[in-house]
Image 1 (cartoon, rainbow, N blue to C red):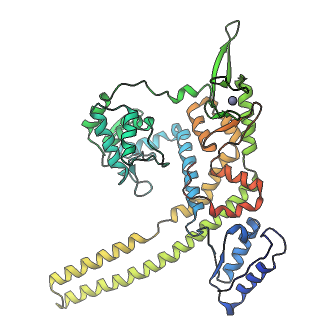
Image 2 (cartoon, rainbow, N blue to C red):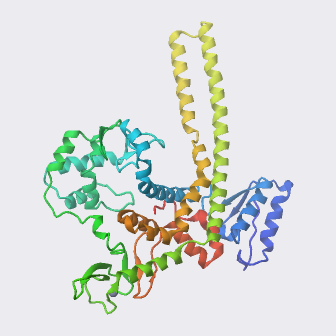
Image 3 (cartoon, rainbow, N blue to C red):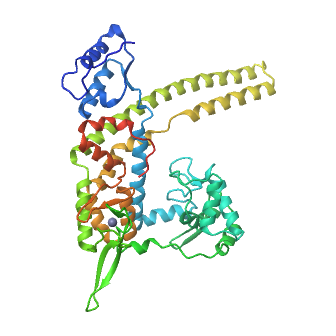
Length: 463
Ligand SMILES: [Zn+2]
């Protein structure tokens, strides 16, 4: 092991003597360097072009790049991309529903659930039907069983399961809206009910139909939770908060002298000195301007795609190598298996011995096959997936404007851009908690070299 320390110079300065020395050390075959270990990737390359060239140079010398603080090979980027892409895909799915209805209907009629698995179910493989989720399904069952007793409201039931270790996918405690959604979902008893189709699904239900029906009547009455549709006139209601008092803004219509309605956004209670009534059109125009401001530039898009693809491909290379090893092991096992047949034929093995040995080997082969990485599908689609994702990202503002006629889609889209709230200062939006792609763009604007730290972003971020 040899250590190179760049003293007093950051990776950003032009002369990085030690860095260059380190690279040339790797280039010397005599040194046979397997790994180039860096503390953090942003120390390693100044920008993404650098990152890729240096990485390729190292590859040429058969040296692999490793980061101490960022697991490159586990590719959090891959995980993050998966999260982002699946969210965009889901959104797109909703939007396109009308167009692809026929194809979907065909599959549904075969008893297959074609959309994302609801909590409690999962898919063992892409494109397959639902399977009960090992962790969540028992909770779903508990929720129904408890609710059927008629002693719970959705609120109390949310608390009941949370106390017993249930958390939502984001790790937060259960909310009553989720409980209601679960109780009302016939999918849990195996019934598919969409459009004009009502059919028994060809997957294992989590609860019985009887229990489901029972739950539709039981439970303590409580005021219904407000529906999404209430937001349709004021999509930014609750999303926008006052920069000064942090209160969420709401919307309502004032009536003019001639009885005309004027829609406004405003504070709910007006004890903030910045509380004001802002006409809806003006307010939403400012929001569109903000969306334009946070829309990633072409340059960012290019860099982002290049890095993700680079890492993605590297991962596949690793998978390929591992698969190759597994294939070799399997072929050895298969030869052994053949030998057992031969020994049986020669009567060296009794029938029982033969059976035992064969089962043993079959089992081993199966276990090995399960280790194979199934990934060609993903590999094939990565470019397209990125392109697809950026189709939305690139047109953030105009997509939002276009969705005016589809309020539910619009709210869903907003969530894909802004993960929590956006602050309103009275004449400008800002400081939103953005979803990963947009957030990275903000970092990119602050310091262009930040993009090379992409592999260090938190894994499993869900937009
Ligand atoms: Zn305020």
